[in-house]
Each structure stands twice: as C-alpha cells, then as structure tokens.
Length: 239
Image (cartoon, rainbow, N blue to C red; front, side, top):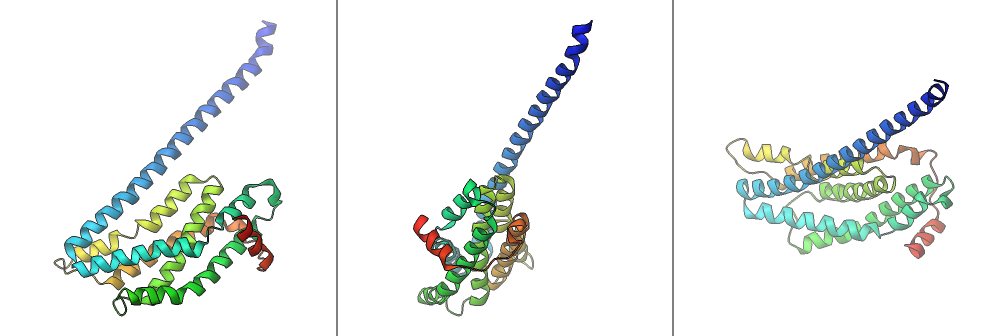
C-alpha cells in the first residue's frame, strides 16, 4: 500500500504531461490545417476573381489589372532589397540582445525611403506601358507601399514562429477584399467595374493586412528609435 501511495503523485504528473503533450500535438495539427486552408482560399479567391473579371468586364480592364499586379510584384522585390534576411537573423539570434525594435524600425524606414525613390520610376514604367490616365496613380502608389509593408510584416511573423497569423495576413492582403469588386461587377446587370473601384478594394485589403501585422509586432515599436546609416551599411553587407 505504501509504495502505491508514494507512486500516485508521480503517475498523476506523468498522466498530466501526456495529456499536455497530446493537446499540444492537436493544436499543432490544427494550426497546420488552418494554414493550409487559408493558402487554399487565397489561390481559389485569385482564380475566381480573374474568372469574374474576364466574364463581367472587358479585355482592357483585365489587361490593366494584370499589368498592375505584375508591377506590384516586381516593386515588392526591388523595394524590399532583400535586406529582410539580415533583419531576420538579428531578430532571432541571441546576439540581438533585446534590440529587435531597432532592426524592425530601421528596416521599415529603409523600405519607405526606397519606395519614395522608386515611385517616379514606377510612374514612368506605367506610363511607358500606356496606362497613364487609365487609373489613379495615387491609389496605386499607396497600394504599392502597403503591399511592401505587408510582405515584410508577413516575413516577421514567420521569423517569430506565427505561421497561422502569417497565413491570415496573406489571406487578408491577397483575397479577402476580392468579394467586394465581384459583388459590384455582378450587381446592376453585370455592367462591369472601373479599375479605380478595384484599386479601392485592393487598398482596403492591403491596409487591413498591415494593421493586422503591425498589431502582432507592436512590441517592436516601443520605444521608438532614430534611423542610423550604420544599420543600413551592416544590412547591405550582411544580406
């Protein structure tokens, strides 16, 4: 009887640890399923939007939208400068020593500065494509900046081991806004939709995604730090 009494607490603890491990595994599996579902929704949403755009609008609108999407994709790569690799290493490494806020803020300030430099070139490129006057460049410029931020915020969430939040951000940014222009296209007898109306919906999705991402990394913005060229030089040399 005495050995049984002495072993009871140990058995209870082992049972609790086993149950905790089982719950953790279930949560991991659930997180993976949610992430897969969100990625699938993004692909399905993009496909459905292109189909609706081709069905309810003219070829010019489809072509302009495709060119703008391509321009944004290229701009994200160019403006990002791939220095997120340096920022990521510094955030997750032990050498960061609590300076993650410095790296995140400096990175986003650098991206903003490069965006301002690249903006005239983006305008020139869209004009060269013959898109001048076909859409609001002001709207498009804001979208480019928000899309760049959204890309970097998503990378931060991956670095911080928050895959579900990352995939939710990508869903908000890439697909959650699309039902609005589709509803506008299909209402009123399917009279089509203007490029600016699509851009307004796109802007809303990009803004919502950025707000979601900034809220998740809000700890990296207290306190605020001044930008230093020393950080930029290290980022370029280490990227």
